[in-house]
Length: 508
Image 1 (spheres, rainbow, N blue to C red):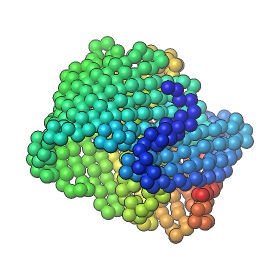
Image 2: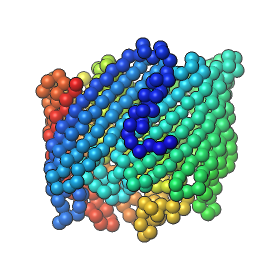
Image 3: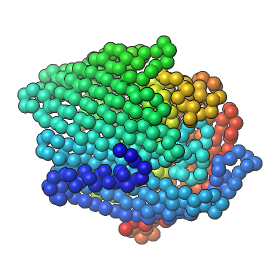
Image 4: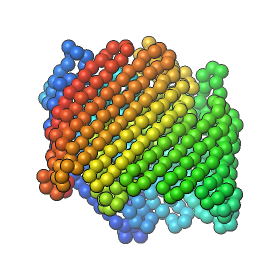
């Protein structure tokens, strides 16, 4: 299966819809096309060092479509944008952006299928200049396409367990074939059909084969047995153990397989608060996890810490709506009952408020290597009828587990060790205030750093935005925005960029 065109993701979802039972005709379908027209000016379109800057005017034409389908046995969400950028002095570009997912019950209580397609522009390296929203135009960005297909059988064996057998196919391709990876995974699990007030259990077996054009195939196997015991309606204990083999060729002296175990507790003091923590041991050492959340009428908090073996293709294939998006959806459910209108407003707010992009510091840079990743995330959101404020912070340590030589296609020989050990941080904040029923003030700021412990390089990026939007008609909005970008590095290549844009958005 190949995927060289955005239509592949759309066709996958349409095929799933046609395979779904006739009862899906009773589903509720909402389709909203839109058009974004934007005229922008940049005083440093190539993100060049002082003395080498070039200014340019950019015209953007971006038609889009948003779709939500929801029924008894089918759910589909789709957002697609075709972004055409016309430059006065540079070559014109075309970008596709797609976020689509679907889930269908094909045979009641037996056969199901999930599908996901994603197309977006991502920075190739966390070092160097960072492109945001494809404006201005940098050389550190390319398009990443991912496709996931996952049919599965699931059936409840009353009094024993719920059995699930799932097959998952993942495919990732990027511009210039910098990354071209496919994987096929099989999962079999039994989830005990027990009284929620008594001991619960789960047994699962995972197997996955990953094929990268630059590497030998990697076969992963994992066997897990988990137990959970409720001490009360608000507190439970859990534990798991088993054996795992990640399958990659580890650095000399390092392991990629072994037994593992973990113990933890979950506390749920209310329907809006939770705290789950665990500790354990895997082949790479002691492990710790934390997941906490709290939600009130206007405010939502989320905190997490995790440690795991990961890779760039695996992270891109598992990109999902951000934690902030989920929090906004919960808080705005009362203010905006219409699901599609709420989804569009969330997308618009996040696009503006995440000044360095939604994945700043959280998603791996391009690499064919495997990493031990330790990641901390904290986010806070406050939303009322007139004001929305979001603050998100993350810190990520990565330690390469495989040889740097396999990244020779991505990095020059002198920088192959650059990504051996890195620490990346990112903070984004955004604020939107409704001055009147038709006028909004928007502001955002983002700051990110990345440091290499291998060669001492450290880069930092700053992004500031401020703007004013006005609703001209119920389905027509105009906006004016100012932007400032700044990049510094102890290895040179510093730059500054200022931009201004005027945008007209039309909903149909």
